Image (tube, rainbow, N blue to C red):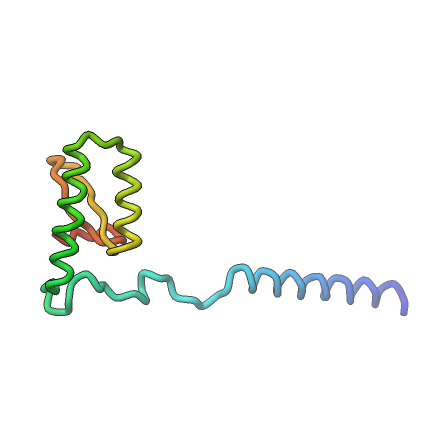
Amino acid sequence: MNTNVKKTILIFGGGFLLFWAFKKIFPIGIKSDKSSKKDTSVGASGEQSGEQKENINLVMKAYLEAKKAGESKQFLSDMNREFIKEYGLKVMSDKGNGKLFVADASGNKVS
């Protein structure tokens, strides 16, 4: 083989390997999680199930009790992480008036 053929094989082979590596790392054509997931926190008619209401009340009560007991902000954020894992809910404060509310994992207000 002469040097031009070797260079051509090297260039196209390297290009193909880069293409393959990037395709494995960043696959094209996969829909984002937000568009494929449906909102399970509220039913299609906009009503919440009884279990969902119980979970909302439980999460809010636990957060308020911990805050009333004087727990640190780090502890409260750890509680929120556990709530998200367990129930898919978290407690947030409204920036306008500072009141607490329960939101789903993506931040949509549930109650």
